[in-house]
Length: 148
Image (tube, one colour):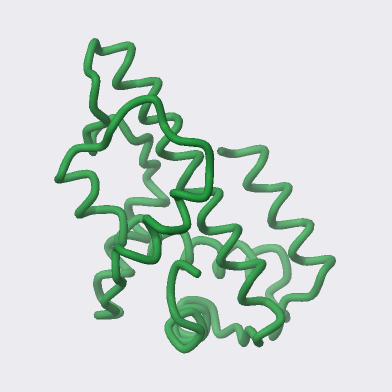
């Protein structure tokens, strides 16, 4: 799990006024890990194109919306541990390139930003939503598959 249940609940509530329960946590953790992996894979392509054998932070395609979510995450003053994030990533096929120390230090911010952006996409799809169900999860996952 990329972060604790209480942290996930605080971020979702603070970012979009949403409540998540324990049944959402595994799905949420997997979603965050997969999106982080997508960003790292795209960063790997950029690093390779630029002749580097290591993924630098600037190789990761951070959109304006994700950049704003990073700033917003910093305002939440939540500390995320890098260890569980890297442990989750280690369960996936390995990247072909390593990541720089700076990139590694920024990974918790990316995870926080993905979490915040996810909560806000739920609210954008359904402003009246209080607790995401299977239907909303499917919609949001499809949006991210299209965009990322």
